Image 1 (cartoon, rainbow, N blue to C red):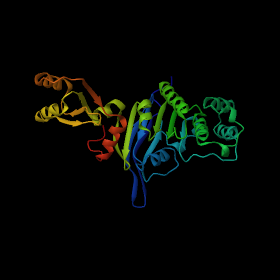
Image 2: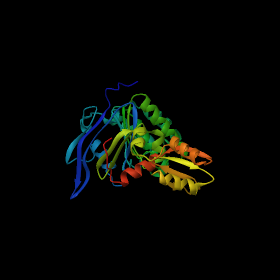
Image 3: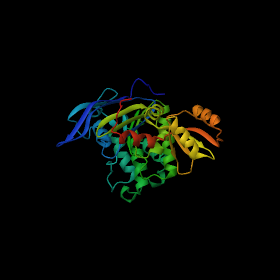
Length: 307
């Protein structure tokens, strides 16, 4: 187990402007070790720019980003501290997969044997001598992950890592990220695939228009911002709908003919149904998905934020 007092990403008042357009606007958050943290935001929210500033590829106009108390450019052998995968990270197309990794290993003083280990880990052992320019999108993504893992780093910063991976590859990556977090590493992952994020992330950082909307655990995010409703099935949906409206609940008809009721708990609906002589075929409480919750929060402009 790695020392959980270290390997923390700390972003303070990070700001980036391009002309009159502010891409990242005073962004402050902290990514702790021992968890997978999902970095969410709509297209153009500033996620990739924020990650590039973390990794010293883009200079901020204000604020700072540090990893274990140091800026990325202060790390003497960065691949041994931070494993990074960005959408813009493209190795030289004329190199073989093994040569690309050997160059990275040599420049970061990483043992040469580690190249073979990470190629095996990402399933590219048989493609080690193949030139990168002939790789499919999925193979290129696996090579990018191999490069990120090369230095056995305590911190991972991954931008859309499942792009191009098939179902088997996505499952493999999910298990890898979970195991890395269990070992005490710091894992920050951006993705537009909400279903996948809901299966792997412990913590969430949500931004929109370069500003922080939420910094919280996955369950708390859905509980605070999600929609919780009661689904009711009855042979008399129209009559029950009228009864519920009279009690100032907010029922609506679902496409399958059931009622979805906001503003009244299941126990109270059960008592109302019994008093009115309704026969209930289903009475269940539901909470919205991560995708529904995310779209609701971003859609309303992020009111009541900074969880």
